[in-house]
Image (cartoon, rainbow, N blue to C red):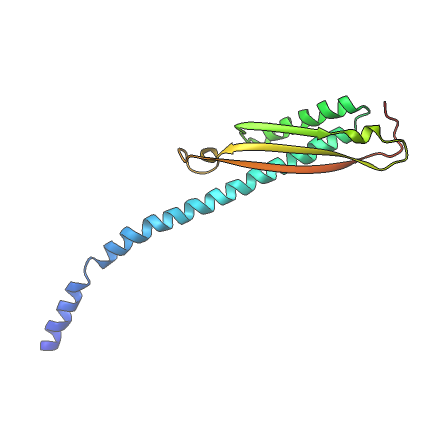
Length: 149
């Protein structure tokens, strides 16, 4: 009989431990989930910037003049970012079209670099402070035997 009394005291001593565990565990789990969401959203933003850089390089490489290549590349990158719904706080698009100065028969590459500064609040949790800078560079070959102006 004393064994039962001792057992009931033991049960009473453990009461409330689940509430304490939940008070500690639930916020930690919520933070873990928020970090997973932020990481996923950052990776999606990186893919969007990489796609914009690729499209800029490709659009620039099929033009006939250096000035047309630069303007076409910048327009393609801007359009790509808009189509993908990525909101950049600041954006920088650089198209290196020096390949158009290469003589015919020479292999050359057009390179595009897209830099996008994204607010972290746009990526994960509204109100979360900070920004993340994402940079992507892509190259595309210029046809070695295509006439250039």
